[in-house]
Amino acid sequence: MKLKYIIIACAATVLYSCSNNKPAEKKQETAAAPHYDLTSLQSPDMEQTVKLPAQLAAYEEVSIFPKVNGYVKNVLVDIGSHVTKGQLLMTLEAPEILQATLQAKEKYARSVSDYRLNKENYTRLKVASRTAGAISAMDLATYKSKMESDSSLSNAEKANWQMQEALMGYLNVRAPFSGIITDRNTHPGALASAESKDNKPMLELKEVDHLRLQVDIPEGIAASLKNKDQISFYLSALPGKKMTATISRKAGNVNIQYRSERIELDVPNKEGSLSPGMYADVILNVKGTPDALIVPKSAVVTSTERKYVIAVRDGKTVRVDVATGIENTNKEEVTGDLKKDDKVIVNASDEIEEGIKVN
Image (cartoon, rainbow, N blue to C red; front, side, top):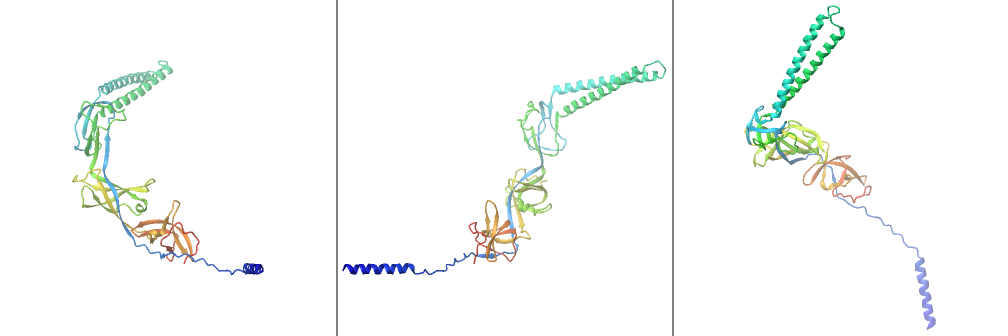
């Protein structure tokens, strides 16, 4: 019985050894290429309607501050007053400026008198010097120098008098252009200080017969707009009323923070129904870029470093950098190193590596 168990154990050992020495059959494992939905590039035929916020502003506006120190004597206008260019708005009084002007005038008159006297003396001495030995050359040169000095002093006193008169003129505050007074922050008797930087303006003047509609346009759209283009807009204060205006000015500069360019449209307002500060919605019909191509929005991958689509060329993936343009719900305009016969992956992602084979 014992011998029987030994024989069985030996047989099992031989069979196990034979099974381990048998060559393993090699299996060809062929990794199946991943499958992605592909789409052809389409020709540009897109248009996009863009609504952008805008605001009406006065064509011209100015905050009126005092040029000289003084007390407010009269205020001849109030909020809502319509004024014309050069109209007197308010008067100030400053006795010290008046006294300084009178003193400057007197000094100028005295300097003119001194100059004329010295000029007369020099003229007489010059005539006398024709007689040999009557006047020395040194005396004649001295009187000539005195006359020229008095002439320079007279001119300086005249300039000082004119400056004081100009300061007197600042006591009468006049409108620099025609418009409407929109704010008033002073009353008779108040001190008007030209030196304080914290003071509110005495008056605010705005030209409202002619307004500016200001809108910031994204740089991709602004590049296609030009002066005289007609644009539609709606005002929140006049719901449902469509208005149009033409582009009058482009800033020619892109705001690096918002990537937009300021555009202005001139809006006539002879009837006075519009006011600066009104909110507006500008409607732009943006046409597609002629050399762009159309892809599904899901085909564009945007990362922190680049924006691209994944094209399939010769059965392999290729990441192609693109710039995007106008878009709608499902499609987007792209420009880049793409050909019309290229195919791109519809649902692209940054997990799809470059150079892999696809079905």
